[in-house]
Amino acid sequence: MSNIISYDLVVIGGGINGAGIAADAAGRGLSVLLCEKNDLGSGTSSQSSKLIHGGLRYLEHCEFRLVKEALAEREILLNIAPHIIKPLCFILPHRPHLRPAWMIRVGLFIYDLLSKRQQLASSKWVSFDQTNPLKEHITHGFKYWDAKVDVILNAMSAAEQGATILPHTKCISAKRSGNHWFINLQDQENNTQQIVKAKALVNATGPWVNNLFEQALELKSPKKIRLVKGSHIIVPRLHLQPQAYILQTEDQRIVFVIPYLEKFSLIGTTDVEYIGDPSDAKITNQEIDYLLAIANGHFKQQISADDIISSFSGVRPLVAADSGAAHDNSRDYCIEIDQLNSRAPLISVFGGKITTYRKLSQDVVTMVCDALTKKRVTTTPSWTSRRRLPGGDFDSLSSLNQMITNKYRWLAPETINRYANTYGSYTMKLLGDINCQQQMGQHFGADLYQCEVEYLQKNEWATCCNDILWRRTKLGLAISKEQAQRLCDFMEHQESHTKQVS
Image 1 (cartoon, rainbow, N blue to C red):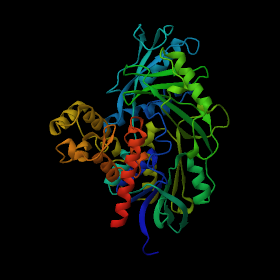
Image 2: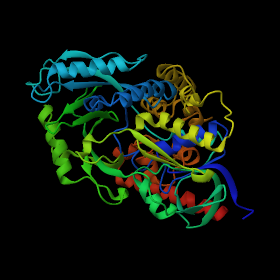
Image 3: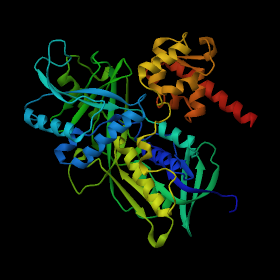
Image 4: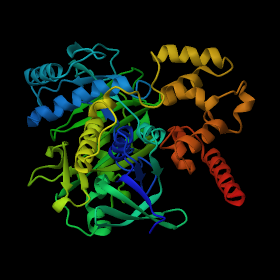
């Protein structure tokens, strides 16, 4: 037992909440280990619409506190990660038979009133002309602003502050003994196991939160969750305009149509009750028909199932209500702490939405610090509201683009733009002293070069081609099967060589 590594905090779950908690805790001086049984952010975090928004629809359910908190977080996130979180204009077409104009005006007025906007404009009523991509009978609507995001920087921030990050590592069991947790971890790639101990344990496993209670902790979960599946389809771009659309539906839900990677439109999401392993979630034909019908009911450009290039489904864990439709359940989060008789604390996260991950993380880590009576090394618990996430330390995207262009004049403008919007100032870390395209290494297709692959392996825990093509660069939509196989072969050869050397 003397060889067991000890931590202040072990976080189980490498989605946006778990990574945010690890980063906040490491920044406050705690020794931290984060483990994730799959790739980081491969569950709900990567299978969502990835919007940073207050939740306009939640006003109908009088969730004013949640909306106000989310809108405040929206402004903070725009400041701390300007390379991946960007303002996005939304158009809400007016459908009088669904919601009267006065109701939407009031909702948007409250939405604007609840937020302290520095980067986003206020909402307004708009009229559509013949150049609009919507059908002719849709003549008016509303314009407002939210933001979009991608996820992995918090794990990088945690690692940079000393946290140990272990993707592809499953928690087999966790038992209390005295004032510590003893946690048995299994490497999913080679099946080796190790035991670590921690003064506190956080269950941030998202839709698997109750599974961890039953299987690894052998405890009864203090909360019930409701699993709701959300599915998206990706189709060729429905219009060439930069804005997204938020479409009202006959069942009182909303569906987003979001510009996606220049050439595509992302359409989603559904809200379907889900039973089973969240890892097995897949879109159904009924969901496809639902999303197609809504898009075709609004846009001049008509699409069919044959136009679908890709799809994905994720499962959201919602704190269970006694009854009601899936889309009526609150997206708010709940944090439970178990520290009976001053035992080693167990803190569990239920529910939540991507927009409020930083506030959730702050609340969890404050609980941990208070439970451990450990002095915080930062002046205030809200330090994460001011510190830029990795790659976000630049004045503006235009100035960053110019800086990259000045140093790497031989690099294609579209590549510079993609790097700036993906890696921010860490583009310099990716390219280093490379001074010509030939030095970027093997070209795998679709603007993906060996230097980027190796950067992602070294800095973002990418271990297979899917990690790179679908969860890091999203270039899987633009690469052929043959090119993808070449990337897989390259990475497998690298892994084999590394094992031989070690």
